[in-house]
Length: 138
Image (tube, rainbow, N blue to C red; front, side, top):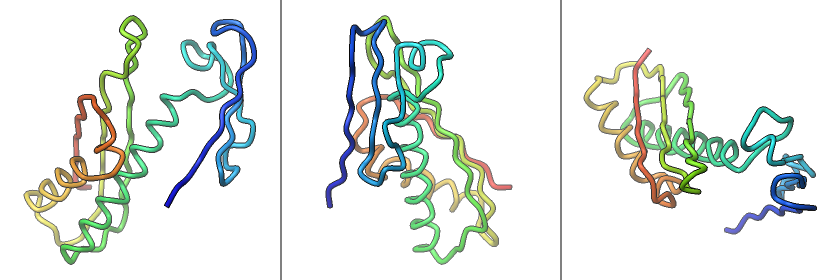
């Protein structure tokens, strides 16, 4: 399985502008710029998309883990915060915060399945940065 996205950029890094398009066209010439990446400009940015990818991948992996252990999640909400250190030019952290409603599961079993999802979702495996995960049952 392969997926793709394209990026187009015009101009300098600071004054230029670009757009992103995904294979599914969910992103279709979606604007990004220095302002949307390093300030409060309109548009998306790579870190926001990385956060969405990690939150989505982790949440789906956790759902598979729960189902495989005999539990059906009623709801899983995951937030991912990506930290970019502009001085270093690197992403230094991915912080996952998950809240789940899962009937009949113990906190210990839930934490075990969360830890596995954190370590083994494909996006986590891609990262070479610190991954922090906070999880709670609601």
